[in-house]
Each structure stands twice: as structure tokens, then as C-alpha cells.
Amino acid sequence: MPSSLDHAPTAGLVVIGNEILSGKTADSNAPYLAKELRFLGVVLARILTIPDEFGLIGRCVRDFASEFTWVFTSGGVGPTHDDITIAAIAAGFGVPVVSDARLQAALRGHYQGRLTEDHLQMAKVPQGSELIDVPGLAYPQVQFRNVIILPGVPELFRTKFSAIKARFAGRPIRLREVFLRADEGTVAGALRKTADEFPAVLIGSYPSFRREEYSVKVTLEAYENDGLDKAAAALEARLKDMNAQIVRVS
Amino acid sequence: MPSSLDHAPTAGLVVIGNEILSGKTADSNAPYLAKELRFLGVVLARILTIPDEFGLIGRCVRDFASEFTWVFTSGGVGPTHDDITIAAIAAGFGVPVVSDARLQAALRGHYQGRLTEDHLQMAKVPQGSELIDVPGLAYPQVQFRNVIILPGVPELFRTKFSAIKARFAGRPIRLREVFLRADEGTVAGALRKTADEFPAVLIGSYPSFRREEYSVKVTLEAYENDGLDKAAAALEARLKDMNAQIVRVS
Image 1 (cartoon, each protein chain N blue to C red):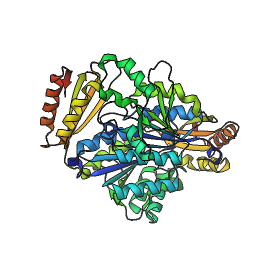
Image 2 (tube, rainbow over the protein chains, first blue to last red; image 1 turned 90 degrees about the vertical axis):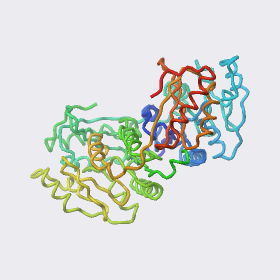
Image 3 (cartoon, one colour; image 1 turned 90 degrees about the horizontal axis):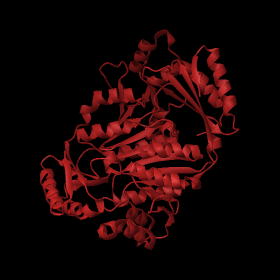
């Protein structure tokens, strides 16, 4: 990370899901959250996918909560025996689980005569949680300290995150992409020199082996006014000097 | 995890990639590896995505190497300044990086007159690494102790993993999926009772909120001859008793 991104708010994502680790489902919440957080200027520093294990969930969430500004969890909230995220987080922080009256009312309103004891599991939260209204949903979002406890179902994950995302906004990060037809090893020197010259700009290099219009994508990222345009110009000049073909810049 | 899966070989995957954490690229190597390992009978226990940070890479890989049977890494191998995985792993284990003669020869053969010092970065490995031939590729796969160091480019990741996967094979795990049109909270009791009755069978429940033919997918997993068929029959009987609609079983 360039030094200038060091003061950005940070985040860790804990994905709770045997179904992802066993390859039965491909997680789509992490790529969605990663992109959203970048637009918000929050640096996503870890994505950790773990099995549905009580002690492990509590430990991982607590560790991330002390290391990052925000922690997001995905999965393991619901009425079945494998939905243990709420209780595991509470245990990880050493607080009891309590049944929230407002969540109970939301569940009674939704399920009415079909309500079971298992449904009422979904009224439970770690003691001290904040409930955040989500427009269009009867069921509010649960935040415990700096931990945002989100459902694994992608539609709900997105609806709930979108509704509350304003509270995470930091200073936006700008991105420039330079697409080359060149060999990565040949342009490596030009990239390194530019990275050394502009320490506030994060430069990445990604080869493509598919038959596309380009063979290397170079990314440059920095905060507004932190030299992104100058770094991109310096890099492009170096690449032109060595006759590397710049296909397009976006 | 059910107790009977406890003796399976385990694995951890470390994905090294700023481009994934910043949402510029969606990782496809983790879902691929997860599915492959399940077919092989290897329990994938963690997927951890971290930024391109030298000390962090070494620490995470070393920790996973002591915790799991196998560690796979994805990304950060190549000729540019952001390709630091090899050196970081060596440092994490306290061994030097050495330039391998066979890898040098492969690079000279491939790049010929265009070879740069930066290309020769790709001949470096942690001291003590094993090089495994990959049919059809000039460049062999690098294994350091129980750590398999794979490239992030999906085509190469798959080609290389496929070529060497026989060495990871454990005892295969069987999967049964039961698709229901039912409310998850209503069937939760039937799932819990079946899970309690068959501790060697791992039972998961996944609601779907899209307009599909089913609303809940129940998965059952176990080793061959560990009661998967009996558990599935017991669950189906319980679901029929409560008039839950089984759409299909696969």
C-alpha cells in the first residue's frame, strides 16, 4: 500500500460458509463488497472464508474487529441449525445473546400464524447491538460495535449493504488503467521506476493470457490530488521511450 | 464439520492480490480450487485474501503451513515489482531465495534474445523447493515443503493444479442435494433432528430468494459408507411427514 492510503478507513470481511469452502457455491458477496468499498474510499485489507465453526467464527471476528475500522460478516444468519454467526460473535466478545423486541415484532408481522420457535432465532442479537432501518425491508440491519452482520444470500447482502453504506464513506480513491501490448518482463523496469518516483501511487501489473486486445493491464491508484495524473504521464512517457504499445487508457 | 471428516487431509488457500481486495478483479481461483479439492477428498478449511505485503504474506503462509496438510498460494509470481510471493514465503520460513538452474534454462529457452534481468526473477525459489513437471508447459510447478506456489492468472492456475492434483487425493466425499419448496424456519426442526441422529453427515441449508423452482436447498455430505443414504432417507421421511414439498433430489 502506498503511504498516502495508510490513513484510510480499513475493513475486513469474514465469509462464514461451508458451502463456499466445499465449492458447492461460488461467493459473490466478496467481489461486490470489494468494489463498493473502493468507491467509498475504504481499504479492504482481508477477506477470510471460514467453516461454520462456533469458536473459530468468534475468534476471527474479534481479531478483525481490533485490527480494522470495520468488519463485515457474510452468512450464517437464519433459522436453521447451521446459522450460528450471531451466537458465535457474542461468545467471541464475551457478551450474552439477547432476544430483541423489535426484531420479534418484525418476525411476528412477517410470519404471522406460521411463526415457529426456529424463526424466533432470528430475533437474537449480541447484547449492545444497534439496529439500523433498511428501507423496503421489515427486518433491520444488525451492527454490533464495529461489526456489520450481513446475511449470505446475495440479494439480501446487497440490499442491506446499499441501505447503510453511507456510514462507511472515507476519502475516494481514483483509479487509472493502462492497457498494453507488451511483455511484462520487458516493461517491469518502467513500472518499478515509476513506483519508486511516486510512492503515493499504488501501481499493479496484471498479464492476460487470453486472446484479448492487450497482454498487460497496469493499474494506478491514489487519492485525489496525490499525483495520479503525473505518475500516469511519467509511466506513459517511459513506455513510449521503449516503444511499448499502449492500446488504451481508461 | 462432522467428526468423520476430521481425519481428511486439509488445505488452506492464500490469495495474494491487491486487485481482488480493491474489487478490480473477481477471483476465480478459489471457487475452482474448492470444487477440485472436494472431488479429491481434501477439506478446504480457509481461504484468505491478503494484500501484496511482504511480511504479511510470509506470516500467513507459514501459519497455514503448520495448521493444514497443504497450503496453496495464488498470485504474486512474475517479473514485476509487485510479484513478491516467492521472496516473502522464503523470508517467512527463514530460508534464502536461490536462483534455480532448471528454471533459468526454461526462461532462456522461452524468451531467448528478449530475456531481461526482470524475467530472471522468475527463476528464483525458496531454497529446498521441489520442481514438478507440468506436461505442455516449459515452466515446472514450484512446491516448497507443503506449500504449492501457484500463479494468479486463472488459465495457468488451472493448468498447473490439474497437472499435479493426483498428489493431494484423499478419501472422496459424497454429496446429496435436496431441493425444497418450503420455509426454512418451518423445516429447521427436521434438519436439526437428522443432523443430531447422523453426526457423521454434514447437513447444510441454503435459502434461495430468486424466483426459482425451489426455495431451500439442503445439502448432505459424508464419506462413502458413512450413512449418507440413511440420513437422506430419514430427512426425506421427516419432510414428507410435515408435508414439505420435495422438488427434486440430486
